[in-house]
Amino acid sequence: MKHFFFVLIAAVFLVPAALAETRIKDIVDFKGTRSNQLVGYGLVVGLSGTGDTLKSAPFTQQSIQSMLDRMGINIRGNQARTRNVAAVMVTADLPAFSQRGSRIDVSVASLGDAKSLYGGTLVLTALSGADEVVYGAAQGPVIISGYSATGAAQSVTQGVPTSGRIANGAVIERDAPGAFGEGAPPELLLRNPDFRTAVRIVDAINTYATSRFGQPIANEKDFRSIRLRIPRTVPLARVFAEIGDLSVEPDQIARVVIDERTGTIVIGRDVRVSTVAVAHGNINVQVTETPQVSQPLPFSEGETVVVPDTQIQVTESGGSVSTVKGASLQELVTALNRMGLKPQGIIAILQTIKSAGALQAELVVQ
Image 1 (cartoon, rainbow, N blue to C red):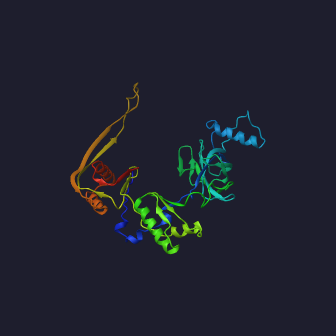
Image 2: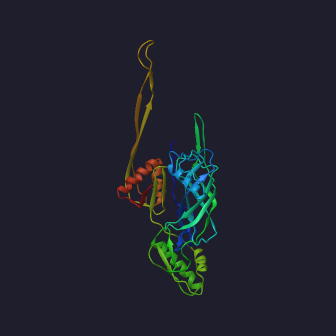
Image 3: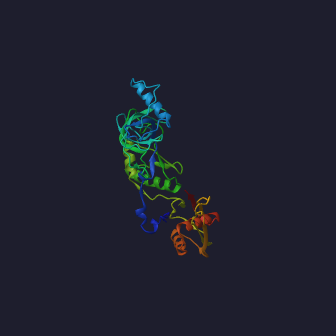
């Protein structure tokens, strides 16, 4: 049975406007201070018979042979039969300004048909970036959050036993690309681009900078980026730290987000609905299967067969016409709840209202 949830964002009706303000550092990224993704291919050893089947995963066998060759052990021509090794992909995020010798977490995921990585240890694995340059190396015991147990007639699996993490499992061997404060003028990049939000951030920064440095230092480049002019006598890191604590009220476009899989509906505070008439009826279809066993007479040549017996019942309820005039989020929610609709019905109505051109908001269906 599916469980549905109706989630609404209506903070504007519940809290004062001052409490809706957010720090600048929480809604922007400083250009050049981004992370980089790393990836590597390796082997997890020490598994208790839950590793790859070498016959079904030939790349695992080839990796074992290559690893042992580098250690001076030649097993080529021999058929390995171990189930204690699994081929894995290792991924990590290289934080901005990471330097040689620092450590980062890595994620490990099975590549073959291994059943579990529980108790395994990742063998030294090189981690490369998109530029194919090695930036680090990972190694260590894999910690998984799931488990799998199999018996003769039943099996139990909790979580995902074929993926895990290694805390501080990678050592950085090359400094992250880029340097702080070098190159183009510093910029702030909005995570949710919006002209109004960009203007508010510029006004807040210039108001602070005028009293702090005696001159404005920010101007909006477009709806996504804000360019800064930092005085030469002030360190860039100090400026970022000070303006990051300034508070603004971010604006957002009217948006309705629907997750049809879980029945979750999120409605933004600025959503508006024009006057529409809505008719919604619920049709329930119930299918009942009652198999009947047909038993032949004794000493006859007949066979015992299962005769299907299917009963289908269709019921329809609702179908009343209601007028929805949602001048605001609160009125829209009140009108939909007054109709006694469940999330599935609300999703269908919102999609139809959008098709009719009466939903003055962006509709995002996931």
